[in-house]
Image 1 (cartoon, rainbow, N blue to C red):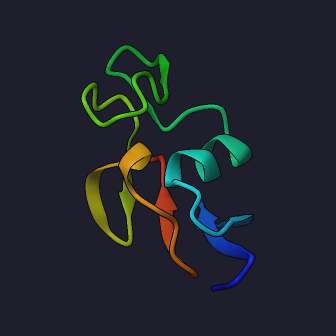
Image 2: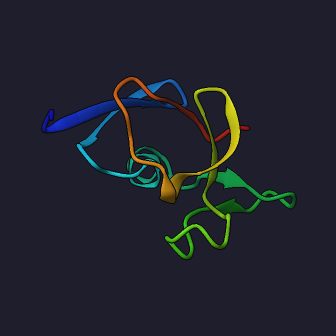
Length: 81
């Protein structure tokens, strides 16, 4: 297993330790996973998949919970969806 994994968050490469969640990669690269309807930045709140505040688009699939998804090499993550 590689020591680090590189993913792309909003088009920019981010290197995280193998086994890190997508939420960790997102927070290393930006301050929020998504924006609320009123324009407020939203990010991981519960860290266990209950609150859905950490939703992002992963490899073209919307509304994925970033706190419950482990980073895979070359994963494309978007917080703009």
